[in-house]
Length: 331
Image 1: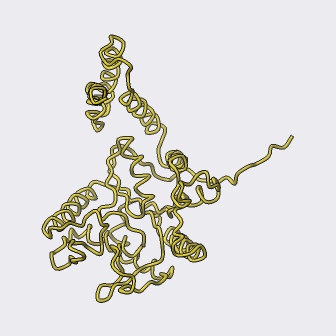
Image 2 (image 1 turned 90 degrees about the vertical axis):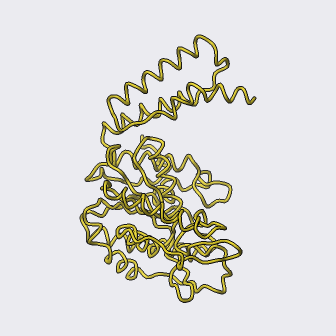
Image 3 (image 1 turned 180 degrees about the vertical axis):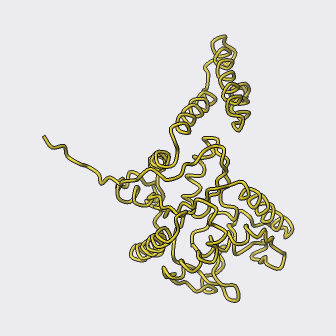
């Protein structure tokens, strides 16, 4: 009897390179980069996520990478004063501040950290969200409009050729990295559904060309996994735009299968077991049984850290030994 297929399966080959805990990773791009980046952090990978904050368009991604590689810090002249706050048109609003020097410090501290991170890294994951861009007079394409009135911007759709040209400008500095491109499954419906489809298609076309032309460039089909394989609104949050945790976890599992070897996957399993233990909320913190539970899992954390010196379980050990107790006191 032939079984009925209820989903379209996305075929994902095993990657030609692997990602491990010992090798630092940079993730840059849309909010979906932060979703996957968070999963990497939870599994104790050495990760730097979005040094400029969330960025959607490929031109701003390229401009950010250019400056980071050069360690080209920002100056006060590049900041904009809007509604009593200082901000950068190349950064997310989380870098904005009432004090000009504080804003500049937030921006440049992030840049220096990322520049140092890239010296050790071999993998860059780039998640592109939209090919629509906003151009500000006497500035060019911005990464974030910061709620400045729309009339001050010109909106247009990038061409695949423009995206290719932008990445060609940093091709030389990226040659020593494994670059993984993804397209965010988050739909930008404020642009319009048809306009969103044009945007995603442009990104996919440009990425396909980049991957075909560069051996160290790769594509991971996060977009297809959510849009085609899952293809159901139950995998979206109430806004019907952003994927649920279940959907992100599904993509994470597919990502793990493709980019982690067996040793890394087994280590991730052990890490998750210990993190689950640290989140345990006992009925009686002072009981003999729970104290034995703490001793057992603290010992397992110490053993794993000794075997893998790059792992740090201080936060989990603190939660085991004090977190639940403090929480019970608050209750």
